[in-house]
Image (cartoon, rainbow, N blue to C red; front, top):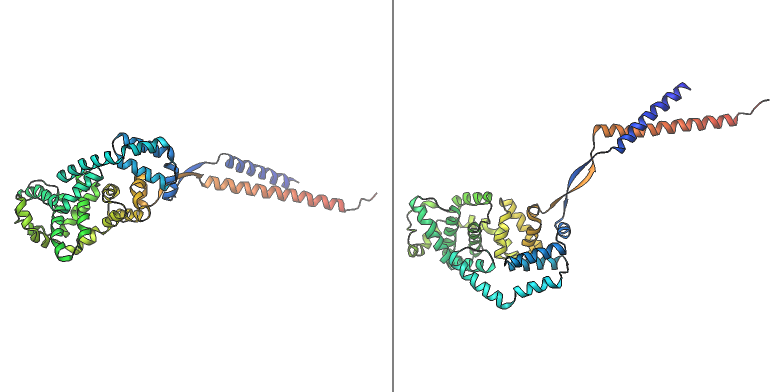
Length: 351
């Protein structure tokens, strides 16, 4: 009898200890990953998209307003009539034509770009050699004089001039790399390249370009540069350059030239560039909008989230075990009493 009492007291203690542990259970946040579509639908609802669209229109960034409109269509989000009306009003043919003409001229002359039309002007000037020779003269004269110069812009201008000269011999085979060099150059000028990627790209120029051959050129004279295109082309490692720009060409083909420049903002190294290219294969023209909404998370192809989970500790494990043992002991005691009662009833009573 004493043994049973001891077992029951022990079981009661274990039961209380176990219940207390469950009742005071601790939680912690656990990181999990959502796919891009799920994350987009959670964040980019009607309210979010309309706010972004109206904000872009207010700041005269009509390209961004249209970008968010296209994302809304992809996500099957129905925008309000007033929002759609605002987009149409600021994106009509007359407004668009005047805005584009003004921006194209600005980009062509300066080589800088903040919107699609300015970029078109900048890229056009580069593709016609005007932009590359302009930048080569500007940075090359500093290079020749031993002054501080923008190594990346200078290097990309060299590649641009050299590739243009080589296209006559390769029947356009270097066009993708030519556009890629222009994209990186414009991205650098407009502050859309990260410091890490700028450093990596600049270091790769040492392998792509033979700078010793360029020391003798006169970079102060734009006419002189134009007449030495073949010498510049001879300083380039064409195979290495083509390989270096293939990912940028993929992004540009899947999105647009302007979007390719904007997306370089999220790139720190060649692996990131590959990941952006992969995302662009799925989202095409919506790639820039995806990055705008979800930012750095997309570079991994995933977006981080958190959820509450039970914090597993050695004390909690002991408490759970205690609860289980106490239940078993109580069941054992209960079954023992029931078994004894049945035996007692089975024994005949003698008078």
